[in-house]
Image 1: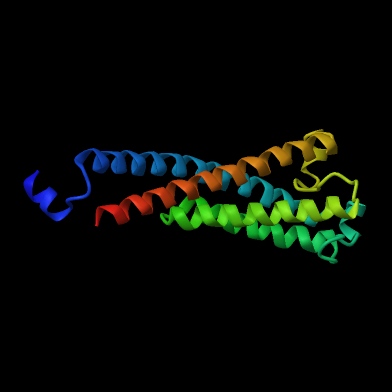
Image 2: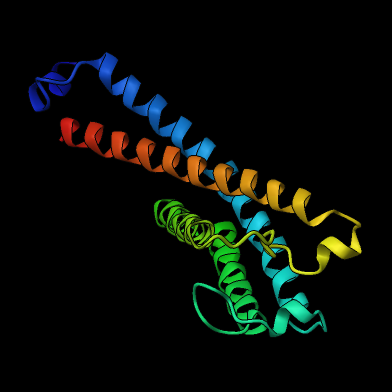
Length: 174
């Protein structure tokens, strides 16, 4: 106890314990969240890539935001989501993974806001033609994906706030 107070006089043992508890809580939450985010990205990514090879008429239409055929956009976004999935599940760099989820979620939110601003009334094709295979109405799938987007955005922000608090607590320690 004496050497501890000599090296770090402004930090009490109680704050050290608080720091460790915060670190464990952040690590546990982030691990579970990033695993679930990875699973979500895997499912939606595979669905998009699978759908991009389909024959639905919507795949030939131009996306109102990016200006490329939905077929190409879905393939590229699906590949990005699969890459994000692998990173979220396999990487030990949880802070970077949380930042990746937050970044992708923000991009998806900006895309949805842009489509809404343009007055596009068609439900999002986030799951591609998978909705037809599982007999899910497009409007229901669209609402489900809005909930998933909110989960990814809020969850990643919570992780990042935990990491920020943990970093601040670490600076107090040293």
